[in-house]
Amino acid sequence: MKLVFDRPACLKPTEFSFCPGCHHGLIHRLVAEAIDVHGLREKTIGVASVGCSVFLYNYFDLDVVEAPHGRAPAVATGVKRVHPDKIVFAIQGDGDLAAIGTSEIIHTANRGENITIIFVNNTTYGMTGGQMAPTTLLGQVTTTSPYGRDFRQDGYPIRMAEMLATLEGSAYVCRVAVDKPANLMKAKRAIREAFRMQKEEMGFSFVEVLSACPTDWNLSPLEACKRVEEELIPYFPLGVFKERKVADHL
Amino acid sequence: MERKLVKGNEAVAMGALDAGCRFYFGYPITPQNEIPEYLSRHLPKVGGTFIQAESEIASINMLLGAAAAGARAMTSSSSPGISLKQEGISYLAGSELPAVIVNMSRSSPGLGGISASQGDYWQAVKGGGHGDYHLIVLAPHSVQELYELTFRAFDFADRYRNPAMILGDAVLGQMKEPLRRVPPPRLDLPPKDWALTGCKGRSPNVIKSLYLGEGELEAHIWKLVKKYERMKNEIVLCEEVETEDADWVLVAFGTAARICRSVVRLARLEGLRVGLVRPITLFPFPEKILRRVSRTTGRFLVVELNAGQMVEDVRLSVEKDAEVFFYGRPCGAGSLPKPREILERLRALHNGIETIPPGEKRNGYETRI
Image (cartoon, rainbow over all chains, first blue to last red; front, side, top):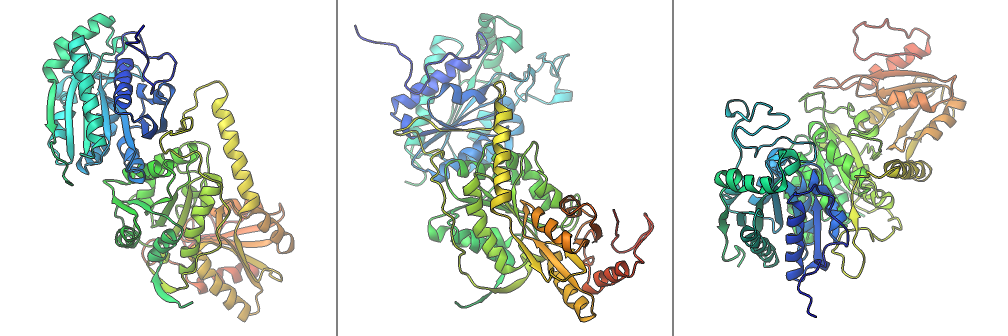
């Protein structure tokens, strides 16, 4: 019989410890598949960030270094500059990337570091128990916006992909979702494309993935997917915002 | 070997280059800018990488990445910038990563000033960042030592898989002295088989400081503590000047030690037998040497360019009945103590007229246990 579905070689034979309905596991799998598809397992180095994404090394069968909160792009820069022939990636959440690490992500993209960042945007701080994130939608109730996010007090949810797409150093910037099979397939292609860009030394690649956090949203997994479609996607539109065709150095 | 007139900051950069440092990450701040400027010119010539980062925080984390990837790498800054790096320094220590951090310190707290100060002693020696850890801290006092100790810092860091700090100051960084650019002997070092290179042909390496399992973190910290104990036995560096017959022993490091050398000379011309103990490694601290000296001398004057920091470590090191006095000035512009001023204090102590009522304002103060 022909084997049509198996665990990616990049993933360890272990179960994810993410909450039921969390999209982190799906995203990990897509990243692992992308590394496998390009045959990069033995030359890939991962950077774990702070938050639910810190457990990268529990699941990925790869060399991994753990970065302080928000600093994964700077750590990845250091790794990549030492090993320009290796593939370097990080998975960062929205608190990590869009709040405490805003400076690092902008300047890493602007330097055109040839690395890949997967940005998991679930509009909340998942690991710490559902506080307001820079991506929290207006009106969204969190443990630190108990009356709903109010722009007069907290400003507006930040669109990172659009912002990073304005930078010359960015080679590939897109936003995807994994709430339903059609979007999942697009996300799969986008993540593969991001790693291909890095493999071909095109520059900085960035995939924002809209992700469900049923636990902190206080929704069932299915309701959480519905929220991604009905509330997140209208504010955070899916699509490719930047796609370099020829590397600057060519 | 010819000698060249070299600025202290440039000697640091030369020491790093000669030690095989090929990655530098930094951010401009006075009075250490000659280090990044020199390396931005010279690293590309030897195939190295220089990055002017967007912040001190980014530079220390680039350093973390480069160290994890197995490279010899360095960052440098001055006091306020070093404060910003403390999070990353704690991670380096917790993740057992060898890297070199240079602090050409300036007067603080806050924005303070740009003149020499030793106000960062506690920050460098007692931790600085969060958690139970130590840096290897080296305190040069000349341009020659800035070169040699920077070179050796890389070996020490690699040997113990621990970050090492060069604690200099504005005077040392900015002054010029003749330098003989001869690398000191290298240590035999273990291979970096823990480094991240992609897991080709081996099981993956993970570099982290998070330990959530029952008892894991405690075991990890005890492992670090064992390293610190080994350092205390293996790499203590300290200079003694005329301590054998001394009635009084000065204890000072870095720029303060340079001033104290003059005090020793002046005092001996006047017939007062004064010696000097100059800790070169501030961590590991030369506890045993100070204890030994305290058995024959018993009277110390600790001189620092701050309001009294290392004096605590001297008191913890010496025999119980030894007397430890302090003379220091928290330095801003124009506040560097002069040899005569220290000698005057020493003579007053020697003649038994030493006490200054607490709270009385003078240049420098002294305390007595």
